[in-house]
Image (cartoon, rainbow, N blue to C red; front, top):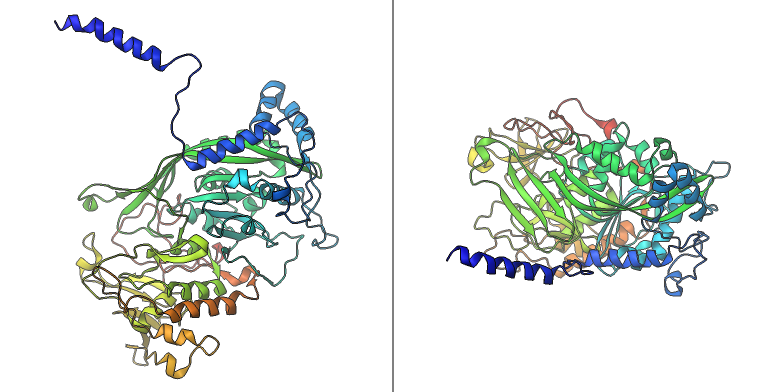
Length: 606
């Protein structure tokens, strides 16, 4: 009987397979909105891929949104993937020859802003032309109505028009990298959802690569300048690290990249392959990228492709927050295109493995970056001041440390766990709560605050070890412990700092609402819902609006020297963990990290 059932079963199985795999049919799966947008862009590009392309009529709707100085002459040359075939069939020389024929010829959109007598790098003009191409094709390329977070590694300080073309929920993180030939004004008024970050450096990018951030869009349109700014970081580590930080990256390699004997697409894939040949505990573990040619531009003898690089899978070892390695644990960020993001909590040390690894699936990913990460990279003090007042528009919750805050939609600050429950109340309250937030944003009394643990860690729980987490200023004049700010006296002891009554003293005459805001109770004891003691009063919203206008109404400083990193864990003294790596993904021993770049590295903790 058993054998008698085999033949009918095989017959039914064969019939089912013939029905399923009929000629001309393909298996399909449900795509996510990102992949639908990418498919739509591919269809647009395929329709325009003529050799050579005829002059296309400008889209009146999009053209009306683009500044008049846009000077790329022959729009509509978007040939996704088409040019790679030329390299395969006719060799690299023939490929470059055809590339030049198909390229959009650009003129300098910033010619009126250039310093007289300075040499204009072709890569600078091509980057500006590419940015304007993205603006003209924003509907197809970026899906502007969906909230996203964008990181630009080389913002030249000029007027940034993309925020006017996308939804207000977008967040723009723009790393200032000035051009020698473009003198900048002292200040620049930015969009409400645009933040100015410090220039890229080896310290900053390598630290960023081990954070748990994942950006929706990235720009690396001046790759040659980024490489120069991050020396001595190896190019393959830099390029692969950047690609592992975003869902899609728009990339233009330097004009001398052709000396590698490869196409730009081959160069990118080779860099990823070389990076993955040497992986460590932190940083990239896996990276599978899809490289496409979005457009081609030429200027001054240089022809370059605008590459659209879309990772299909990313696996990175990451930290809880900027440059921090807590108690022998780390996280793995796992991203597969079309799937939900996962954060896997790993336990590195054997004695912390109780309970096994924990997997957190982020089912609804919001565009955001941890406040500890963006402060660690570096912001102007003006923006840090505004972020402080923005934090006071949020309810007070237990454990207000900086890693529990996010910069999210519209460039606003939110708590990462606004519904956290607590039966205890061992957290700063009233004006001490405000001082505690000031400390993390480096706008408080005292400078160079560092986090320390004043006991010996004997278990995975600090509070179980008999010690306390304290913060100390660089000159040791101030300490924050026992939920209050203390100042050193002549006899060497520390006493609480009297903060006074802001309303009675009118401490904020330009923004009077701030006096009432800082005097709020800010209670962190919460059971099942927020109440009037934890919810911010209306005065805090009025205070934020006033402080924003006061600090940023006339623009943010574009002086690189005014932008500093701010992190409380640089020089953290915690000898309980055998760290194989501390801050960089290739660093093998713990050393104090700088606040504003490699030129400020200190010898030993303070």
